[in-house]
Amino acid sequence: MVHINENFLKLKSRYLFSRIGEKTSEYQNTHPDKKVIRFGIGDTTQPLPSTILHAFHRGVDEMGDAATYRGYGPEQGYLFLRELIAKFDFQERGADIKPDEIFISDGSKCDTGNILDIFGENIVGITDPAYPVYVDTNIMAGNSGPIQSNGQYEGLVYLSANEANKFCPEPPNHQVDIIYLCSPNNPTGVAMNRQQLTQWVNYALDHHSVILFDAAYEKYIRDDNFPHSIFEIPHAKKVAIEFRSFSKTAGFTGARCAFTVVPKDLMGEDSVGTSVSLHDLWNRRHSTKFNGVSYPVQCAAAAAYTEQGNKEITELLNYYRYNAELIKKTLQKIGFHYWGGENSPYIWVKTPQNLSSWEFFDFMLNNLQIVITPGSGFGIAGEEYFRITCFGNHEDTQIATERMLRWDWNELIP
Image 1 (tube, one colour):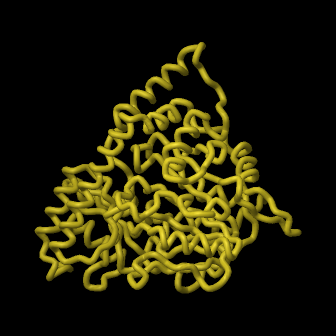
Image 2 (cartoon, one colour):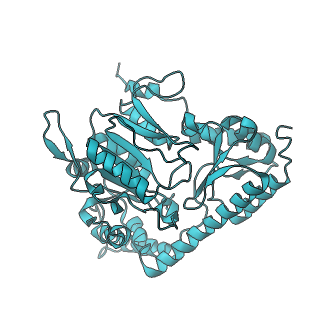
Image 3 (cartoon, helix red, strand yellow):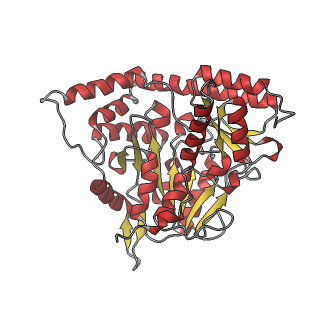
């Protein structure tokens, strides 16, 4: 018989968003007359901005002409896109990132999991609550150990994000080798300020750690006190890898394009203590296991950096920000405690009457036909919280908030 990777058997039975999808489908099948509004999975709803769409079409047209046709492109991504990213996303913000430190990919979700290929046995620290992919991919890679009775894994270090620390955990007083940080955070919607990120960079420098920094939602930051990139912090190039995505900023959830920054200054070491370039390892992995993002998609991504493309993306971001403001005003009126929604497309909300996350999920689905994300799906520290996304359309957001305002929250369970 073929032997399997038994680490997969340590995974919890279902991925969070699969379970949400199943529950929602079951409800819709038994209540076909009800309009269900989805505030759960963070998927965009608005079409690609026109400038980006036209560039996409031009790229496709070029593939249909022998004179401009392109076959295999560079695995790291076309230079025309990497140069734009380096200039506008980093260098103009004071971060000295070069084009050859950027790797184009088909999604940050993939990269945050695939990056583990270049690491060996390490102490891994993950904020709790956190995007489930961080934990699950470490389980698959054999970094977790067995699951404990409280639902956490023995081999992982959990960095609690809670109301006391305003959902921004501080560095621990012990050794952690690999640290996952996400800012603006998914699920809590809270961004880390310059001082907080500096503390983490200093910790990593002192402990020879590597920070895996997920900045997929940085375009939602409006407050200058919050860095868009960890590389805005001095010396971060020695300790950090950053993940970015076009999905939630330019509507590429279906088109698929992202990038990872691995600085050439970043080093690890082998079993005998010899320094090894993590940039070189990732380049080797990327070139071996990935054939690159399609040329038309990269053309579309490049259009995001044009003056008109940037203007249209700002309009798209403002569309979702409007939803966030409407949802926050509704939560205020009904007396719910919440965080986020200022520099993020996510709002993190305390469940009323100490209901569990899944109890409140069922309540919202069955009574208001609104799908939310149970906080416990992001870790045990997320129990008695839920996440709302702002990626719906205006009409659905208006309907959902009106339903919430009409409900008598003094008698929560009918």
